[in-house]
Structure formats: C-alpha cells, structure tokens
Image (cartoon, rainbow over all chains, first blue to last red):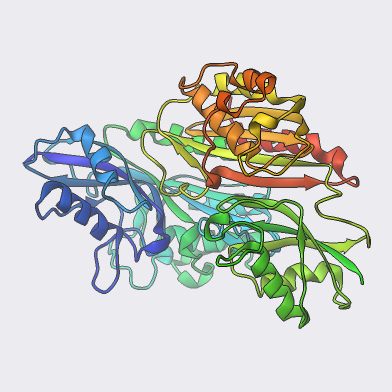
Length: 266
Length: 266
C-alpha cells in the first residue's frame, strides 16, 4: 500500500505525549482517529519522535500506509478539518514504500525556551519555562558547547531510559538571549530519553550559578547523572525538525536560521 | 489613601475582556478578587484600556487606592501568588494621588499578529490570526501608513462606539513580515473602539488583494466604514504599552525596539 509522510505540529499542553497509551489522550491517538474517520479504516501511524507529555512539536514526522487514492498533498487539508485545533498537519507527501519516520531519521533539532524574569509570563506560560533567578546566557552558552561532538551520553539518560547504546553525536548547541527570553538550540544525530531537558536543566543551573561550570564535562567523563542539573519542565521543549537522507544537508542552515530569527537585535 | 499603579499582562483567551460585567468573567474581576483577598477589603481598579474579549495585554496599566502599608513594589509578588496563571502583574509602584490610568494616558502601542500560511498554526492559535491567502506585507505596509497623522477616524469607529470626538493622532504604523508571521504595529494618542482590529482587517484585505489599495485614504476622506475591511478577530491583538507624561519620550524608541526584535533577518 502506498506510504504517506506527514509533517505535524502540535501544542503538547493538552496531551500525555505523542505515544498512544491507556487512560490518557495522546497526539498519536487523535491523529489516528482523524485518519480513521477520513479513510473509514483503522490506520496506525509511526512518528519520528515519541515526545513526552507537555512537549511541543513544530516538525514531527509521521508515516502511515493506505490504499486510499486521495492525492498525497491533500491529506494535510483533509486532516486539518478533522483534527482538534492544537494539532495541525503542516504538509503531506508521498513517501517511498520503505520510508520509516523513526529509523530513517538522520538528525533532529530541539529548542528549549526559557522566560527569565522575576515574574512569570501569562502569554508564554505554555511555551517557556519560567526561571526567576538571573541567568547568564553567555555562561550557559559556554557550558552548552561541551555537548558538541560524539560522546557517550549515558549521564544524560533519564532513569527509565532503555537505550543500551548511549553514544550520540551533537552537531551544534547554542544558548542565546533576546530580552527576557533565553533559547537553547541543539542539533544532533539522535537523543536519549529526556536528554534535552536534562541538558536544559543543567545549563539553567550553571547559568544561575547554582551548579559549577564544567558540569557537562564532568558528567561526560564520569558518565554520572549526578554531575548534571535537574530535568527541566517539558513545556519549554519543542521538536523543531527531523532530518532524513533527502534533506540532511539543510540541517545546519536550518539551525542557523532559527538562531538568526531569534537573536534579533545585537 | 495612597494610590498604587500596576503593569498587568494577560492572556485574553479565557476572558470576556478587561471590564467587569455580569454573566461573564473579566480580567478586572479576577484582579479585584485577588486584591480583595490580599487586602481583606473591597478594592476597585481602573484600567488604562478596556480591552475586548479575547484581546491580550502585555502592558495594561491599572491604578487603585488602598490604606494598606504593603510596600508598593511588593504588590506584584503578592498578587501573582493569588492570580490565575493567565494574568500576571509585571510591576507595581507608588503613584501620585491624582494619577489616572486612563485619563493620564498620552499614547498606546498595539500589535496585531497574523500567521500567514495555508494551514493554521497549532502553537500560535491563541495569539495570531490565521490568514490562509498570501499576504503582500509591503503593500500592507504602504496601506497602513495612510493612518499616520491627525485624522477624524470616524470610519474606524465600530458600530456601538460612543465616542463623539473621533479625531486621533497616529504617530507611527508599520506592517512587517518575518517568515510566516506578519505584524502590524501602531502607536497613537488614543484609539476608538475596535479601531486597531478594523485597521488590521483592512490591511489584511488589501494585502490579499481583496480590497483595493487606498481604502484607508478613501475611508478617512469619506468618513465611511464601508470603505474599510472587516474587523479582524480579537486574539491577534495585544495592548503592548501605555505611555504617560513621565515616560512618553520612550514611546518611539519602544515602537522601534518592538520592530527590530520582530523583523529579525533581512
């Protein structure tokens, strides 16, 4: 059966994560329900990343198979009429029969947003983690650079993580400030469970002086979770984009563009 | 009794507007309830702008009187522990006994945000008006400039408006694009009921080619609402800041800074 690839955006606030589960509503469930109504068939989807409860996505990638002859580009329009407004299909296209949203992924970009001010933000409360103590974004940026390269990220694997191979390559990682907002942006070959949130929590605590600089280097050397900071809350995290063999040369330009857009004035 | 001035931020999504009303919850009601609990007294507040249902604020200004001896700067912290998380006091300070949040205002900046893409945004659904047809932001900017100056804005007064004097001065008005987002930013001495939303709706329809260029000039000359576009939805609108005699020289720099932050890359 023909395979279709979707790019999906969602606000993670109202969901227990991407992955279908009992006793809680997931993004996957709502997407499969919409596809089921559209195609009058039971359709299962595979997502590139199983984002956690509260985590957002701008560029989740999904594949599914269907015998339907709806033109591939039309799925986005059709599904959006059937999905709740906190899930949007941004694009749909035909995929090779052996395309796999998760296994074919060559890299991902994640963004972690912080709102750094004595008082929390009302308007940004679902998209930014509030940090009330002053953050030194330059110190955070220096600390964050320590993850760049190929390392055994065992220390960053949350308890409950099942990965046996914990080696990953981080291609780039930056922390930048624009006004009261601080952004952590990271691009890597792959990420362990909660890895970006642990990285964010670590740079936040280094940035506020609560944790000494060099925490990441110590954690990588000793492979110990205890050298790092707390796991930052999920709502600051957004899966920005997933790259595949056909577009992985866009990865660094994409990373740079997100940085430029954010770090507006100098 | 001493007078206190607050700067208040709110997400207008869950409210029937700023102003207290029967049968619907307003921002004013929640703020007065929080003050009432804090001060164990019945406190009425006066806001600079009576924003409509669904309209947001980053810089609403409020005054109230109290015999309490809580230090003025502490109200922000105390109230934020008692307010729902979609209303935040950003700052609090002592005000002159005759300070009036509404009558002393010398000018305001409003922002209208549009998300211009075939598909709506999930993450921006509460903060941006979705416009699915392509917008020519340069044409919108040229059109928007026609409001600059001192004019009789009678055509922009929504039906239901009670203002008899409809002359206002618009100091600056710009439309800029950054990716799929388009921002209308306007600074003026004051605004009539729904004026910015009617302006936004007009530039949107000019930008999509639905309305001919020069609509604003025609409307100002003929004083006719019919020359203009539809009233744009409330959720794209944010009251950014209100200026008073003590800070009105910051108004144009503030306007320019918002523009710079947004119009990130060129």
